Length: 222
Length: 280
Image (cartoon, rainbow over all chains, first blue to last red; front, side, top):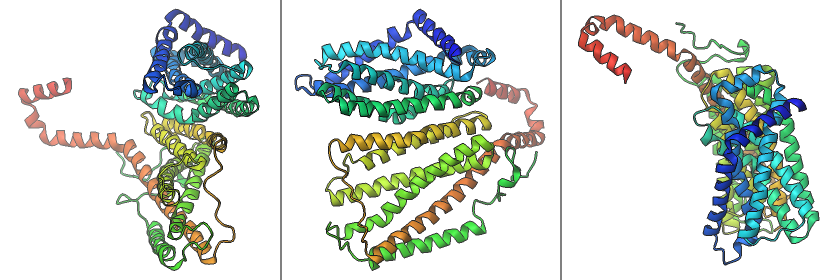
């Protein structure tokens, strides 16, 4: 399973390295969202700095929609999905590979965004261990739930419209928990933050497990 | 072409009740409907006239009466989503149309009941707290629940072969359902950081007649849920039958039309017009 996952993840990351879709399209989009928040919330009033953790994660969720859509659009064109099924790769491995590649791309994006908010919003970044741990599990959870819905909506005419409606309510707890963990890290109360980290870990584990078992049916059917 | 509208294509036959072509009502559902209506009347009588104002220290007065609707509707909405999750899991196991349609019907009724829960909750909030909306843990997670299951219903409406749609919907139903406890905990913790829970539990030393009215509400709304379920289930069953036979029926209708109008269509102009119509 792990070998298959690495194969699929490697394929997706090579695709990204050659096509540069996330780098050239999703990252600028995320940067634009950061600018939009500054226009919406007066940058001089200090609201931006206070709201940074939440705005950061909202931006990540928006960018994640695009990354997930992209990851499954490449599978629905040219009968790639049938190729995947014929390849004899374990569906659980395919799921882990897709989710892993999405998570890795999102993590790089989050790193860029962190620089962005530190510079643009003058955000204080404290508790690096908690920040990195929170970002990792939150991203894993978003990528896992996103892969499930991504494959479900892939190749459908209204898939692009449907994905946000499906995914955003499911990952709403991730937004709450990751935001609160970041707030805790910034305020120097890591105890609170680790509790939220626990919730995020449960979320990620739950959807990774779900995906390992359910991905086969979804890959077959949709 | 078959005219047997009750012939199931997928799933064991015995689980699918026969559907009469004239509607979704049957003797059983009519009796249930009448009982539900009488119950609603009784609930109105008890809720609005016979039961006393809130005697408790909360000074809610007449405002407490909306609880006779709010509490039962909220509980049965939860039950409805539970049935959807059960139906989804059972569909993946048994692959029977019965469970698929049960999950679908229950989700539809559940969304309606959840919206009613929100509406009655907001009216109560306006009465008790002077505001339509507070970011209370329960209100917030109920709002998220509505969107979660609206997404599930959207998945149900996707195109594709029937088996594929049912399987996809079942998995989507389960993805949504496993999120419910996480939503609950996250929203609970989120709000408890800022303020204590705003909705206090109902007084355990509740007045006898109040308690009776509340229980009556439970029973009446359970009956209403059951009645709506029966009808939505049958409508969906008929829809899927129509879908299976719709093309056959349309083809045979067109053929019958062609038989009768053939002499007219044989003129070149008419054929040309038809060809142009197809090309367009």
